[in-house]
Image 1 (tube, rainbow, N blue to C red):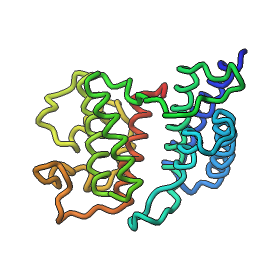
Image 2 (cartoon, rainbow, N blue to C red):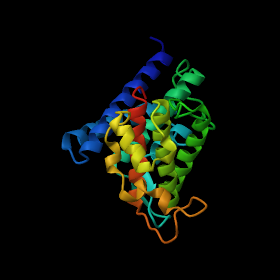
Image 3 (cartoon, rainbow, N blue to C red):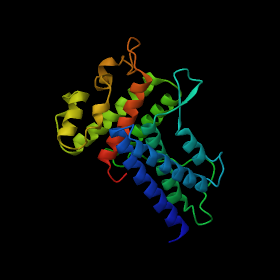
Image 4 (cartoon, one colour):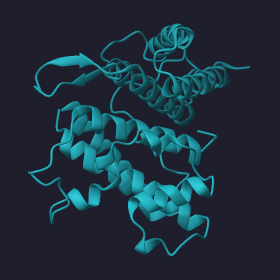
Length: 251
């Protein structure tokens, strides 16, 4: 096995472990054995990222890995740790980016380091049936993550709810279920769960998320008289990752 193939295989193994741990943490965030295994997995991931970034903390891959552990507080200037479930989801996303970069650049043939510079554009929504929707979802997901990091929780909440509804709607359309246009977001969730397109990850959604359309102003932003917590915004982002795993099991 050459170095390139070995790197991809190792990243795939770490990604699978991360998905399994993410599911276990979503079910029981305080399980001691799972938390211990997650810490071991994080160290393995750190070692792989360090190797692929050539040991440089300034490398885009190393920066993304470090940022996976942090989130801006509502004060915008202070930095606090994200919760463990969110950290695992972020690290899995970084590993996916690393695997795509290795594959596209044939990294590993000369020591394994991925070329520095701008990170590659990674399409995370290739499983979405509506091809025209994929770049829209990708941009919305990036904007939501940026809003979370900047403490703009209302914007992050609305963007994440929109991404989640679009994913579920696409799955329902692909399955030939309907008429979807007249259904509320809550009805779409229920239909997708009933058809076993997704499991019960949406049970974690805050009540406001299920009626986010009703809470929007004419521009699609959260109305000024409505308040959502940082936890609400982060929960919707976490549920997106759970639903993605349901809709794209090979991810």
